[in-house]
Image (cartoon, rainbow, N blue to C red; front, side, top):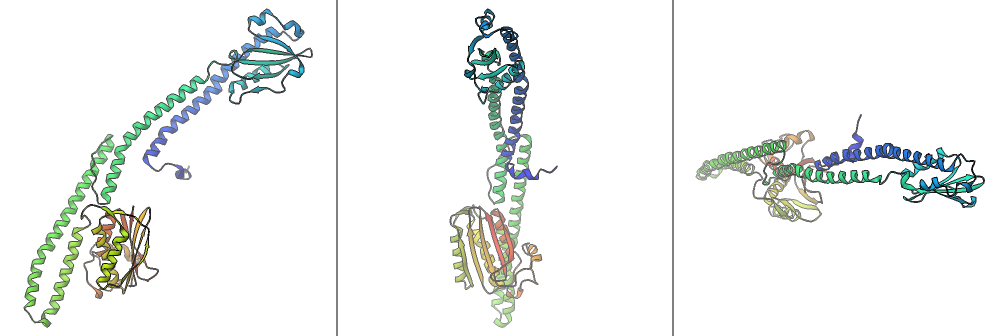
Length: 435
């Protein structure tokens, strides 16, 4: 049996589902006990008491042959606390009456009707009185007695106690459950913050399983941080050590003739560019803490700086307003990489920013050759250069530009999406970050 149709109506959070698991059995138990109590105990007791009173009425009323006047003033009726009155036929009500919530009244009326064929009407106006109307010898007889003789006293006490203690235990369980789920919530917050490049203080707490998961998360976070630190130190050290021989080569080439040294100087500059790429990749995205930044103002400043560098780039679309927690330096490097790639492999670039309540999207489009759909996943990997798709004569690189952009996006809890530009026909690169 498939329950997929039920999933849209179920709570999405763990706390909501746990609360549902807690409340569903309690409410079901209350309903089952209430129905059983009403149908079995409550109805059975009322039926038994009604039958007992019916025998007393038979003893007072006789077999039906006695005239109504002889029934009045009987000592037996007074002993049984039953009042008899003769009424006109016109004074007898037309239909039985009871209050809408008087469930025992249904049983009382049904049992009296079964016991007395000549019974005309039964009135149950309140919890204190029962009126019964008979027709004897063409005259009406009104019979009155205490309602408590046919109904259990305070039958609602069981339901009241059951509901009260059910609600009380549910509230206690609710707070206990919330206290047990709080460590899981803190673990999820710490994991989400680490995915965005921030370290929240976290200490394992809660049940044994939650503590084990928290300890595993701390170990994983420490290993990832050590790995990032080792990568950064390694690449920074290698890049830094290579700068010294490059500087010596540049000084040596300066002593040669310009025509003879020009090709070798270009090679040295290419090597310097590669080292700069390694250093940018080594620095990664862990530069400072995230702080509130106006992304629209930041991107507008990046575009203006690119225009001053003689890049053909424009800010085509701006939507939304507000601030979002970002590492401004990392975002700047990512957008600058996309713009640099766009003007390197195309003739112009367009940048757009869309800020909504849920996400931030920074889009860079160019009119270059683009990247085929089957090669886009490969293009974002480190040290990847797509010769068939991008014209390498337009510039050299180590293949880390898109990889750095992806790292920046992931460090902010987002991603990098590559596609085909509908307006310019080249590559469309989107940095999407959830708010």
